[in-house]
Image (tube, rainbow, N blue to C red; front, side):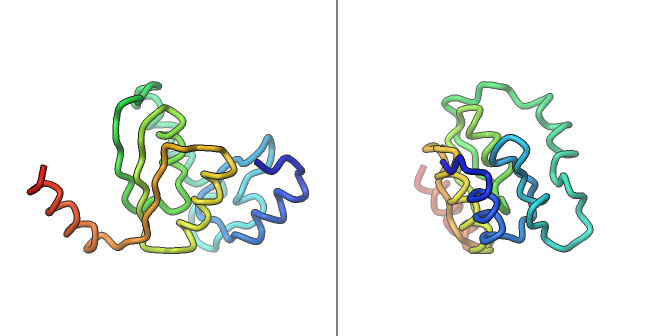
Length: 132
């Protein structure tokens, strides 16, 4: 984990622009440093998380979650912090690269990432269901 703020800010800039606002250290947030263009608010997806965190159990230990279209992994990280094993999938390699950096930065061993489209995953999921 990078602890030096200036080094951390440089890394966030290098990896950006960021679609999700993720706090990588106290007061250091990805979209505050390098936001992606678009209509989403600066704190995206905080408005969604405020609603979801009230209904998602705090302990997800023993559960497996598939996050399709994960972007940089805001929800992936939150589920992993609650103990779930998470597979995070996005078609954009740059999103998965950012998420892989976040996984290492936060020391989260319970996240697996994949670059894939939904049509590629549809084939995998169909085969998995048939083989289960």
